[in-house]
Picture: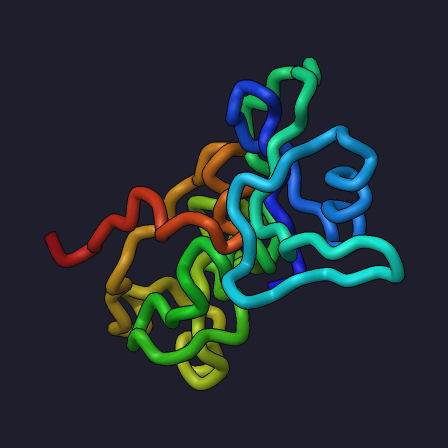
Length: 164
């Protein structure tokens, strides 16, 4: 995992940055390491620091309020833990519950992670028409949850079963 989670001074998640950017923020005194990667260190000619997994800014940064997490294919795969919503195997594609040809859109509630085989088998049909019930219902993560998921520092939030 090359991403480092950046927390505001109030411990709110702000963004994910590269390991290099995180180390620079720590060395400039703008951030402190809250959680380091076990057994990994970043070395330079005159300095050695633990490789940060989570850093916290020393000063509070005001950010505009964001009501919704932006939708992305990667975000759907991460939200669903790279597991197919139809069979539970490893997912590599994103499937539209209501196909785009039938008015379905790219949204958190209309997309699920799917393995290529099930995505092809479902084709241009709804899960009911294809006889392929969803194992887990799609949901919209909060902006904070999506950041934590992207950083890999959080379990799968609000995992909802379609069976229950």
